[in-house]
Length: 171
Image 1 (tube, rainbow, N blue to C red):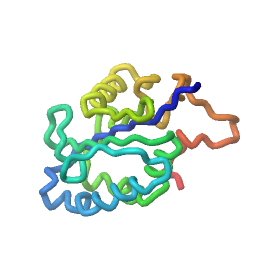
Image 2: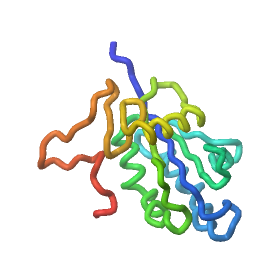
Image 3: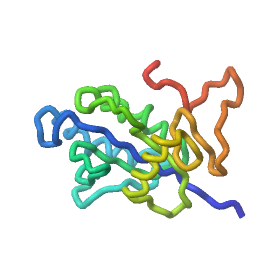
Image 4: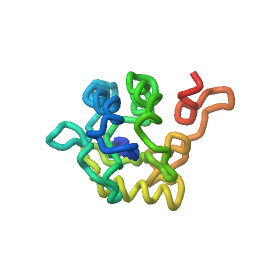
């Protein structure tokens, strides 16, 4: 019997200011709606949240301006569709208004057994691994994805667009 896996993802963003600062209001005002878009998206399994309903109070890397997000999806394709083809695109397009450009990886993915839930500590470790070692089966990106068996995912043919590496802003 083939073991079933889900895709864990975590991302961080360093705000220009604390979330209660007026400069961050455009982001904060969209947060609840964008989280609901994720929860209704095909392939969504789970998202990390505190009692407040989001993960903005969780601190990783000891930085009070880092915003943390983590979720679990059925596949890379379902996460990609949510991230780049749903209403989530709007805040992604405006992210420079609220967040600094990071000099380290800000997003990471890895496979977990179905039913498992990742922790913020695990996400921080995976982001560190991606930063120090580059993409691997244990910590990868849309640009360099790996399948559930740890093999790199390649395009099926040179003329077929690769949904994992296409540039979503080139639409």
